[in-house]
Length: 383
Ligand SMILES: Cc1ncc(COP(=O)(O)O)c(C=O)c1O
Image (tube, rainbow, N blue to C red; front, side, top):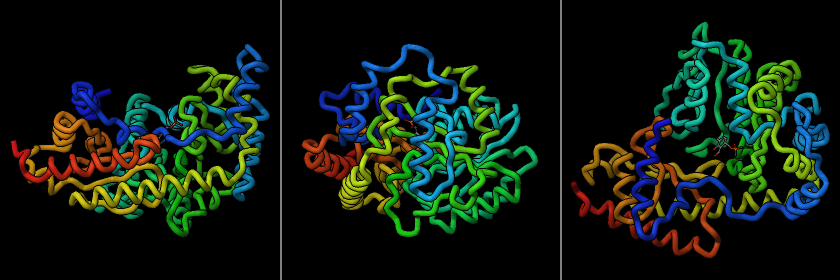
């Protein structure tokens, strides 16, 4: 899979003091104590056998409890435990698609959607969007629907823009997908990091019987557990049965120790997530401030981990033909890694993550970012 990011990584590898933290979406804060302890206990007690194909029943029960706390009627039979949410997405696309079928996605979008859909023989269809900031335009979406369209996939809060569906936007999308007999695949990897008002109602709230909505979730971001590789899909039992067979046939179930440990997830106090959200939001605000000071086009994100910055006017000023070469030069000269928009199907934009840098490095890293960008942009780099 070809990514323009690889050019940036190559340049960073050649720099004596590279800062890769602006590229990475893995949280710096520590996972909750309850889960760390549960992992230690699980490591000494867990079975060495394959876990059940759909995932441990107790973990599916724990997941159902979390959803019920949010007012969503989910039972253990609605849940499949997956190898992180990325493999959940792969399973969902694998079960919804026949070769040549289409799945719609917004632009910009998480690069895994078009990559996975294409790898499975489907056709990813980008729904055009003018402002690159709000999530999706219903009229543009309708215009893209064909007899081969099976689903719409989107993340809310979105990677990379942070755009987050309001309750009303969620309702409209669910109604539209139901009317047109499409599945609405909701990638909710960042659902715990919603900062904007009126974003507490999710698409699933408007679809209590899971006729339309498929929720794909992750323990990676909410609990800072990217390395445990556990996520899940919540959907109607018939789809869950198909997904379970697909995952069993191709991947087998995810590792039993992490599943066993995550049974304790309902014991994590809500204050853990509230505090994590507050800290992420503070960092995003500071990052927006620094990027805005350098003249890049930025808005405070409505959720998620990233700032999405418009560099189009700066490309012309520095004489770069595209964002990939702009980012590669920034990495080569200053050791700063930003993710080029080309990988998100949005040339002219870059993504900066606020969550990977250690607390002790955060302020110096922000200073270095601002200084490097000002020096890079001020015209002395004209090629
Ligand atoms: C929008 C989105 N979905 C899914 C994932 C995958 O997360 P994981 O496979 O760790 O659950 C990511 C990771 O960055 C993401 O940004």
